[in-house]
Image (cartoon, rainbow, N blue to C red):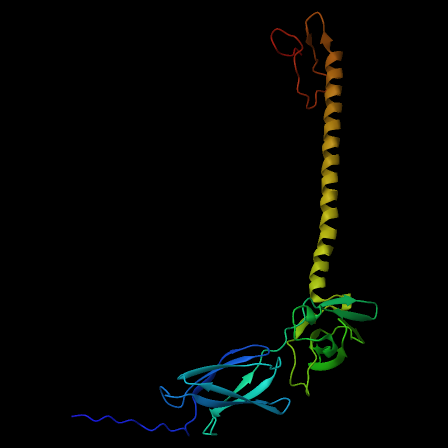
Length: 289
């Protein structure tokens, strides 16, 4: 024996397993399951999006008969914070979650140029890679002094450069540039950071490494050149000395040459030194003394 029982759906139950599938800069994909399995009719959901930064609310209506529902929330702001609530249209129990959108990217190619009494920070415009960024929003610049362990806000600009003055000798600094924060510093871009640790030489860390390599090359190259010149001169001196000794020996040998005997004759009183003696046409191939 058996009996078939059909349960009456409870439309007061909340949606199940609400979670975020993907979050971008201006959108978020969320997914949830119906309050009960296999709905037999369309179910109307209310999706409330509360902007925790701007303190505004938006409500969207979603109708679906599927057990699993996926929905994309659009027109969000980069770096924003949101509270999402999903419930049936009859204002049943709710499911909620928080979403943080992806902030704007950091500016590219942050560089430092050193002047006499100040430095200039340069970077590429964010508008080149971020369609959601307007140059009128501008950038803000921060500086961290590692010696004093202090972070300072230097200001903001709508340009792609910024002048920094009154830096102290012997202090190491880190500079950050990012899209200007909105709404009390709650909605900011990612920072680009550059270390400036050679204030005494007026160079940033990358320029310092390059400068040091250049300095080493400036020392090594002349030294190698001088060594090559010295070796060349040494070879020339040795060659000239060898030719001179060879000519002297030839003259010395010729002065003792006997055409009658066909050989050079040396007496025991001749100072031969270190000469290597060669016979001149003697049939025996030796020198007579």
